[in-house]
Length: 358
Image 1 (cartoon, one colour):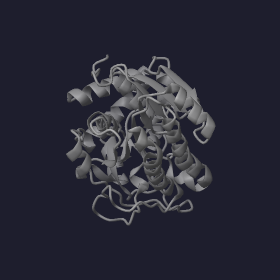
Image 2 (cartoon, rainbow, N blue to C red; image 1 turned 90 degrees about the vertical axis):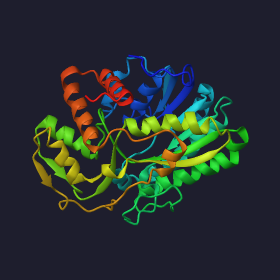
Image 3 (cartoon, helix red, strand yellow; image 1 turned 60 degrees about the vertical axis):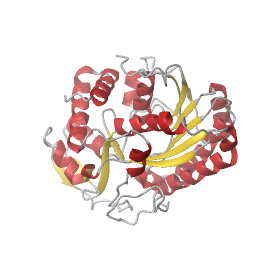
């Protein structure tokens, strides 16, 4: 089902770091089906949470892949320079807030030093000309404001994860300004919202907890039911990443920018509202279980202003909150029946890009 092939991506050599992760796999499948030659770098593909990768890894999505730790600077530089990609999407990260409290140093090493190592590898890759560094909506100094953060708002982070993503933003600009600008490399950092969709089995995520609760017929424990987040389907930021490359980085060689890729205001909902929407499809037993553990700081109110990306690219959010939940639930229900993750991802892409109302 190679329906997305475009002349821009046909034959382009593209590197995706973190390719075995949830978002990395969706992006890699997407790029492959647009005709790109996709190369992957990740620390591992064998753990139980990477169901999407393990299910689809024999489908020839990747031209080649390397399993390395991006904290290893010399190996990372060597690997990237040997791949010598034209386009780099840097997604590899320690992606969890609560885990960052347990492993703060490893989180900083991976998300900050690892980012510097990847960009140092780009510096040594002669063909590299366009880079997307994926950070997070949590990179901002969150003061629990009711309006969405803009790209020029102060960076910060009360928890180690958020601070590491703010630092990754600073490192990205420094590496571009110091080394990549003179190579005429164009680069953008991108800050997406809370991404959900089929195939995400990562720990400490609400949709993962819901899916596991359903599959195991167990009660769902909610630790932060009133937290408000900008929920979006995984295809939304992936579409934005590629359009930023096509429409912004390509037209402005040697440029640097940052973009929020969040949903419109209608998708900004509490965890409780998300669970309520899920119960339209699944019966769940829910426990508000946020008082039985030591409380770790997590932002309560967080949203993004997406005006800039909509003004500078053709990207627009496509799936509203209700459709996002429906597609996610449908993917997991059908995966239990078919065990064919790749076909389900391709079908969602077909529906997303051709706006089929299924």
